[in-house]
Amino acid sequence: MDGSMNINPSEQELGAADAPFYLPQDDEIDVFAAAYTNRLPVLLKGPTGCGKTRFVTHMAAQLGRPLYTVACHDDLSAADLIGRYLLKGGETVWVDGPLTRAVREGAICYLDEVVEARKDVTVVLHPLTDDRRILPIDRTGEELEAAPGFMLVASYNPGYQNILKTLKPSTRQRFVSLEFDFPAPGLETRVVAQESGLDPDRCAALVRLAGKLRALKGQDLEEGVSTRLVVYAATLIAQGMSTDRAILAAMVEPLTDDEDTKRGLLDLVAAIFG
Ligand SMILES: Nc1ncnc2c1ncn2[C@@H]1O[C@H](COP(=O)(O)OP(=O)(O)OP(=O)(O)O)[C@@H](O)[C@H]1O
Ligand SMILES: [Mg+2]
View 1 (cartoon, rainbow, N blue to C red):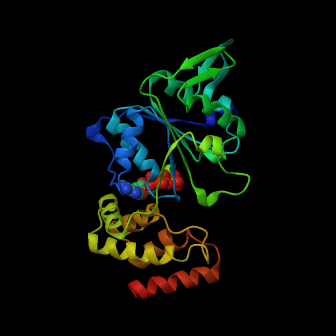
View 2 (view 1 turned 90 degrees about the vertical axis):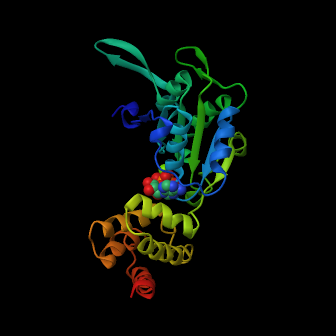
View 3 (view 1 turned 135 degrees about the horizontal axis):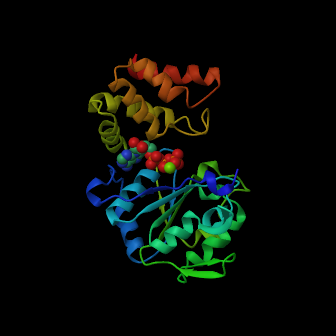
């Protein structure tokens, strides 16, 4: 399959009025807005399902910029981002990749899980993420200067890293960085209630359970339960599923395949909901 076909950038152009719900954990909205104003790129670090993507979608809408999201994977090359010549009706035509479109249009380009991408991708990002803000396109000989609204945002989960997959200091030190984590219990309860429609008391109990499950990270579990999964559990309960069934399906099974670990997690569930 052609590499450009599986990127599928999601383009969204939202006004501030229909910005998706995002509850700030700290001053991240101010930092992001200041970075945008000053044309600085931003790197978001944090575990899966803690709100990074939601935050970027929210900020793009707030700032009135189109958003191109690229989910990076280990086959993603510079050409997938920049563009390539494609055969169309017997003719070879140049087709911009999502990064090039964002650079031309002054959009936000969000590279999700950027450490997964191939090495040649970072080379492309360097001249774009310092004060030059240029994108050289070798294939066409163009050297694009980023339009004023262009902003590069990247995210990665430091937990997934291994020695081979980490950002080089020369890349990392080109970004204003924000660390994300799961919201504090009071905030997470509000997020879960808002997203699921379940009453806040029952959401608070799910968030308490999430806290206990997160305490097991590193011992029995690779990653703590995400806010995303807590929202799933609450959504299933709000739709009429029993609490036990919803927790098993949304907050236990996704965390482990090991039967012993699963029994241990269910003991924690019983301690809170039993
Ligand atoms: N602060 C928040 N405000 C609103 N919703 C939130 C917040 N934090 C988490 N969520 C909820 O959690 C879900 C998962 O968040 P999101 O998709 O942004 O995670 P992520 O950090 O991008 O994860 P991944 O690294 O797996 O891509 C969202 O769909 C939303 O329902
Ligand atoms: Mg995400």
